[in-house]
Length: 214
Ligand SMILES: C[S@@+](CC[C@H](N)C(=O)[O-])C[C@H]1O[C@@H](n2cnc3c(N)ncnc32)[C@H](O)[C@@H]1O
Image (cartoon, rainbow, N blue to C red; front, side):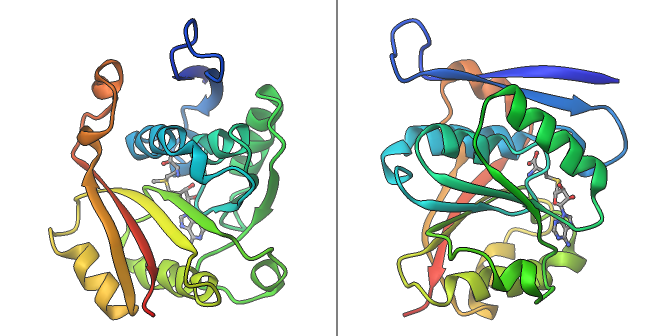
């Protein structure tokens, strides 16, 4: 079954910059075909921090339905949406969703931990986004190998990710130390979600910003 969910940023009537993004969701057993609470939280954060995104190059990893990346493109970033190379239906859905919103995003495959031309030919991102990409512990090292590679050339580049605390409460501290990164922000999503969106946080979500260790 296909549904379209609507996500409003800003107060549409009072905010000349506000907009509504429509996300096409397919109720099927594939993680990338429906929207996860982490995506709603990260998209809201991008909106609230929109001044940081203007003119930047943004890469969304494990984008799935791609709400944070589409919001980043609406506020003036040059965005590439990615997901694993075998996720054909996810890419079809992503194309439909970007068209539905008139969003000018590039779409390409990028599988974490694979070092090939899809990674080497990327424009080096200023900001990497990832919503709920820390959900299967077997993929953590592959994800962080890719993130570390992408952050490695630019000490100002940042990985912003939202995650549910599923795998033990010291997960982020452990990964940061293991991959020689530094945490520049760690906050609870409840601290920035507007009241009318809190309903979408049925689970406890944190947002972390990571940069390369100098
Ligand atoms: C839990 S879903 C989150 C989707 C979306 N970011 C959201 O929050 O709504 C995880 C996403 O990561 C993608 N993914 C899983 N393993 C991956 C890998 N090894 N490389 C790249 N993407 C992967 C999945 O296809 C899926 O889109």
